[in-house]
Amino acid sequence: MVGFYHEIALKGGNRPWFLRQMGNNLKRALAGTGITTFKRDSMMATFKLKSPDQWPLVKERLEHVIGVERFGRAYRVDSTIEAIQEAVPFMLEGQNPTSFRVTARRTDKRFPMTSPQINELVGGQIIDLTGWPVNLNNPDFDLQIKTTGKDTLLSSEVLRGPGGMPVGVGGHVAMLLSGGIDSPVAAYQMMRRGCKVTFIHFHSFPLVDGTSKEKAGDLVELLTQYQQDSRLIMVPFSAAQQRIIVTVPPAYRVTIYRRFMLRIAQELALKYGAGALITGDSLGQVSSQTLENMTTIGTVADKLPIFRPLLTMDKEEIIDKARPLGTYPISIIPDQDCCSLFVPKHPVTKSRVEDVVRMEEDLPVDEMVQEALDAVEEQTYHWPPSAASKRVAEEAHSG
Ligand code: ATP
Ligand code: MG
Image 1 (cartoon, rainbow, N blue to C red):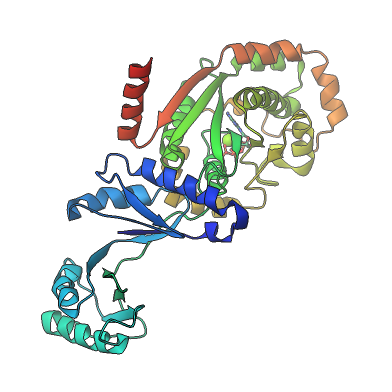
Image 2 (tube, rainbow, N blue to C red):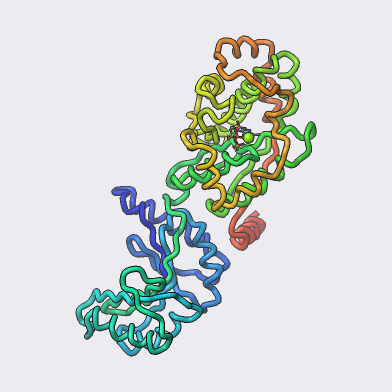
């Protein structure tokens, strides 16, 4: 059973730290699968499955560990041709390919057969067992046999992990998470750069129903599979909105809502030690995301940078990422977004900072920010559940 990580190889002096983080994340992700120990050597980790029944769960977990580039299941046998041939039928179980080949690699010359000789012998064995046709250039099934001095690994499936850099090595960021399509994708992009993400969701409950809160919760639960622990901060936004609509002309409300969101998010980010604010903005997608409006909105974040990982992506590209991630079906559930409350069809597209600052002079800005901060609710999420319940038990024990 093998897992590879890839991008970490490029990391020079940071490599030992990256590998340690990768190892910790792997260990944590495999909690509850029955795998407790594994060997890590340079860019590869191997662990032993006690029984083939463990594989489906292990596979599902590994698919979610950021940093894992490729992985697969291998049989480890003695480095003798008899042991190899004995394992071959197991490797064919459940397979029905249109063609096959054998790819042997002898890394230790003490093995008494050459790679072509192994290919020929095992290939003949497979033809006898199955009658599958051989295709050397583009086989449907490729049985790989790697012999070393110590032992031999047989593998066939190579599965793709998420790749990227292990979560934890890229710092900590605060994500403004709506219930929409874009922001969960943006969060995942940051995780793939090794960032731990804290989520902040603004909602207008009870002015609207609680759908957006539920969606945010479901999205965070899903994304937690990639970073193992998440915090979601729910910010009630209706009190601020009710003040804004009294004095701010309709065309400017979204811009000013967004400025308040950023001010509040910045305070929360600082409180929890996040080093940047992340949004799902994509340039020109809607009126609040023109260059002018992003600038007007962004000036209130004066202590932390704002990063927008989707800035240059169009909606199609974003949806293409949301589907395999699994967030898309949650994101498209209809809800009443808090920024669609009390706003006209055609908000201003080219706002100017000085105009907006003048409009805000009528508002008790600090008080509104504080009021929202005082009313936040927090939720935590853990994955896999078995590790979470273990930790809760430990905390209860130590407390
Ligand atoms: P999304 O699909 O992420 O909702 P969108 O295309 O609907 O994006 P907007 O509604 O303009 O775009 O939001 C732009 C960004 O502002 C979002 O990606 C998100 O980062 C932030 N944002 C918008 N609404 C909220 C909210 N209710 N809570 C937290 N962040 C929000
Ligand atoms: Mg939205």
